[in-house]
Amino acid sequence: MTLPLIGAGSAASGRGEAVTGTFSTGGTQAWQPLPVVRTGDDHGGAVDATVTADPSALRQRYTGIGFSLDETSVSNLWKLTPAERARAVRLLVDPVHGAGLDRFRLTIGSPDLIEHLPFWSEDDLPAGVTEDFGLKHFSIRRDLDLHIIDTVKLIQRYNPRATFFASAWSAPAWMKTDNRFLGEVALKPGSSTDYYQVGKLRDDCVDVFARYYVKFVQAYARHGIRVDALTLLNEPGMDVVYPAMDISVAQQQKLALAIKREMRAHHLGTQLYVHDFNFWDWRDPHSTATKNYHRIFDDAPDGSVTGAQVREAADAIAFHPYWGDPTVMRDAYEQTGKPVQLTETSDLAPATVLDDFRLDAGSYILWAQATDQNGGTLHWTPARDNDIDWDQVAATTKWPDRLVMVHTDTGRFSVRDELYGLGQFAKYLTPGDTRIESSATDNGVGNVVYRTRAGGYVAVLGNSAGSDRRVRMTVGDRTFVVTVPAGAFATYRWQDRGRH
Image (cartoon, rainbow, N blue to C red):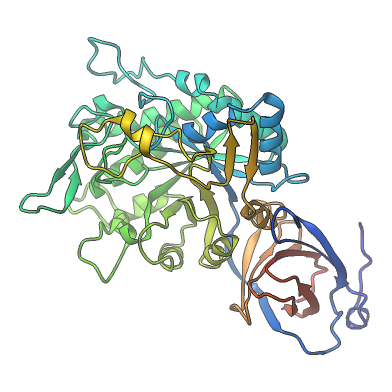
């Protein structure tokens, strides 16, 4: 709808731009319309909370909200009939008829949990072959056979604006010092409680590992899938026995430069996210045990790499939330000028999305979000037993109550109510929309406000109270009052005519 250009007088009289809204409290009240108000529609009455935003104080750009296309989740979706699977994916990703989730994590080879053994890389060698520096044995055959590619295609059908990035948990076995794709742990010398990851990237395999990443991006491109970013490595140095690998800070620096060099050589614009680990592992001033991976931006002690080179190669810093203080995201953004991406989390709460976006995260990606009605069908363990019985792991490990539950007994699926709150962000934000500074939570009402690429605004408000809240919103010189239903997340949108 085209609205007439108005002056200050008409805005003050309540004939400003239309502010449309929807709200969700769960599946029974999902994306329901709210009464239309207009900018300038504020008669100075009492309110329960206020939100003030400054359009001139620009922060991070929105990248997306979504989930991982790990093999376990994909496998469960493919236990549904084609019609039911399409219905599930449409509910998750369709921006008109569903939640509009729009950012998805691919795994380069096996991640830390799968349904179907064995774990695999994209360059496993046949018997008698010990190395493959020419990557002649590279293949995404398992990605095809396990329906990962098919699932991407289904997502693309229902959300053409969906984007994809990818992470490896380990290099292929032959690129590692212990020649094992799975992790291998050992006690640190002199300790009975602290472990380390034995398998390290071979120094002579930094360049071929970068080419391995290029091959993955190219292979997916041949199937019509653009992988727009890679993370350097998922959780480097984790002391676990599922697929994992250690890369030192020096190797991270060299690998970052090698990846960007190889991408440019093949005319690929793929971005690179460094770190991809917990807040704590980036920096923690209160601990001497942290890995302090922020050192990737320091000059190498031997002079081989400068911090400036690595900062130029890095397009973003990726974080996981399982350990540490989330305010490190804001610190990293302000100290480095690099975008921050939350590339893995299991926290479904829309309130956490709002909080993390206020801390400058550009994306929010859920991990492993589809299991069966028992929470099973997965191989994952925190154990440090290098001779782990993976069949026993599958029989006893359960991850119930993920975002999607596939009921293999009935052939149907169900979703958690949090999906609808997540949709209050994903349905209405577009990659490239820019967050602006806004006031803190007031009387149980939190907020995050974005300036859209099209010249309007999107504000998401969360009301944690048990009653409706009247909220006065002031964005620049525009003011209006809305009512946010009890326990709801509500999204408001309006255009701007260039006045602040």
